[in-house]
Image (cartoon, rainbow, N blue to C red; front, top):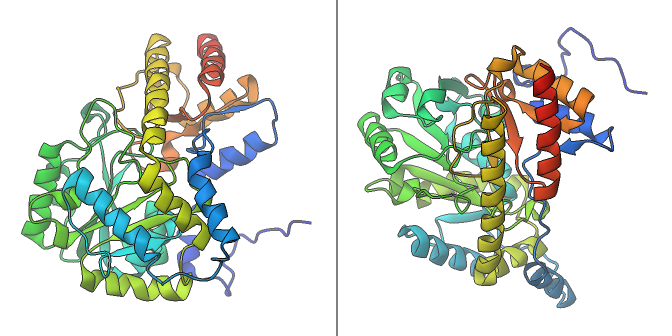
Length: 393
């Protein structure tokens, strides 16, 4: 039996836990899991499996008997290849010896970063809507997330002018994530340069989550640490889950200057020792031979993106054209329902799961996140069900 939850604080539970709300994504995932006929457009997980030529490298490492820990920072071959990869793509140079740590996904990377930089009461500026884990990870480190609401009329792209009024003497960093989850927005070079200048002006770190860096459509991905004078004050987060369809392998990375990395590494070495060895070999192989698979998946996501954006606008759910990741973020305001009610009724009445925009923080209200990670055919079916639901309203 599931124990009843007390409405009063339990003295054995830390106060910081009560500051964190349960994930809105997981809530609708749980509902969908109980309904076998649901088409879930709620979870941001590629429907592609990890390509066989990539995961074979992991199996081969096991057959060779390589099942022990790696160095705390990860396989040197992987760090060297990742440094080469970032140099080739964005022209930013990292020393694999002291400026790269391989982590258990970006989630663990965030934990290391915020645990290392936050003193109690330090403020981290977070543009919203944003991925549901950003604010909780700051709270778990006893920091204070200071949210800045992005505007739908600006296609959810944050600006330096919106950030600067929220800076105080307690501000330590600006935390951004582009391409953005949940909106699919990208950050223009012009706005990135202005935010970089703001960070220099106020002596702030910029923590840049770029997990979707290769999933950009008809636009440029701006690697924040590659901007002039920004490598030393940028913490770059990335990983293999989305670009290479490697969610379950749990491989991410954090790149920063050696002094910061030494601090992050203290938490990393005590929390996890090292990322899974088998997964690191798969990640290494992904960097070596995975580009054709990235391009193939990119092309398919782009087809789905166009389908969803066109259908949403056609049925009256106003949707700007997202240029990154694999999400659309249409407004459901014209239906007369709030986003929670819309999502609940849609899953119960038409068996389609989406996530209420309010789950992603301020600015997400009256929107829903649609993840186009299912097959084209399933998305077509889901859109027909959504169209039927909207027509009823």
